[in-house]
Length: 251
Image 1 (cartoon, rainbow, N blue to C red):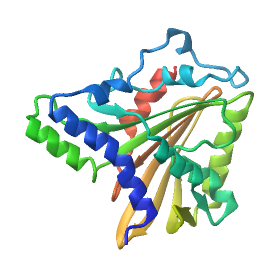
Image 2 (image 1 turned 135 degrees about the vertical axis):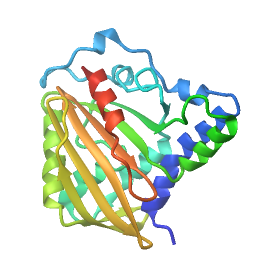
Image 3 (image 1 turned 90 degrees about the horizontal axis):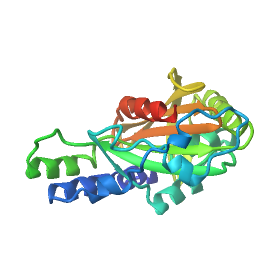
Image 4 (image 1 turned 120 degrees about the horizontal axis):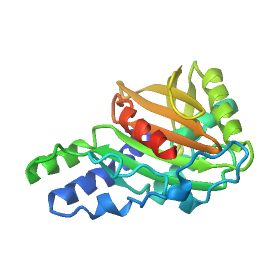
């Protein structure tokens, strides 16, 4: 039986894969709807104690197709957000890490914006190839990006909470989602660059005998925390290009 972790991964993939299939039929609305015009007023970095950004201001700062033309971007469905917000772990100290896996927010944010992305087929691909790419997206890596802005030093505190949780839960924990449990075998902390602080996390699990990983990169820029989580039905690829584009857009 598939675990809730795998079902959540399939849910995350559905919107982007269907959007690719729509593109194969001659429609690019799904790829353009989530794109937002850059905001010149929000292009400069905020100081740690600056006033928090609103949802609208953060939406203008989300990475879009304008920054990564070879990716398709779609909105994160509310039911997917709800799954992440309801998820929990058997160890209270692991909750900040759990939050990063489901586009949920660590701490109390004043503004939030989300998007998800998947690599597009190469330019010039036939409609059949594009459709095949849409189906492949179900098994491939897709990345959710969550921007959260905090009052005062909230972003610093949220970043510190995730970093501490990753260390405390390095030996693993049990994730509960939709009433089902999945054993996360280990949490590996790594280095990342960009912003004022950055952290990379790799979560490993074995689902039905298959190794499943997620790759998460957190970047704090002033009072905004950007969380990029790449997931797949197997081993996820690192969201290097998406992280670089998002960090650049944050300023």
